[in-house]
Image (tube, rainbow, N blue to C red; front, side):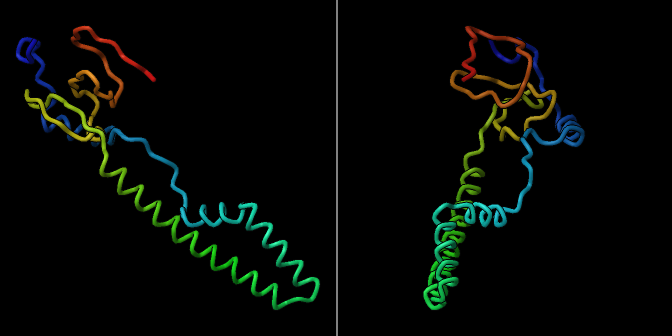
Length: 151
């Protein structure tokens, strides 16, 4: 059945702007944390780092300050390299997330358009086809042999 037979016009551009202004984007907001602070905290919790710090303190207590300084400098070098690699990995994941944004087909101004799923607004009419991920809650207006796998 075609869109004309169902008489679905979708939202106009003005309605989309109003809905986006009122309800925001169709995306989850995550708690903002300082990624560098989190990475340092995770690094300090590493059992191997803790063991090496204990070993360095034993060197200092036993009077072998040269060995203690050497071990602390080795820990520092490994920690800096680990934090650098963690930062690069985090940046690569952010770029990948932006690159792989899910798409959705919606009806706007009487025409089918493909948009990023984060641009879906309240009141949009989505076209869901076989194998399509559903990017929002909604009401089914018309379906043929419809089933959903919620896994």
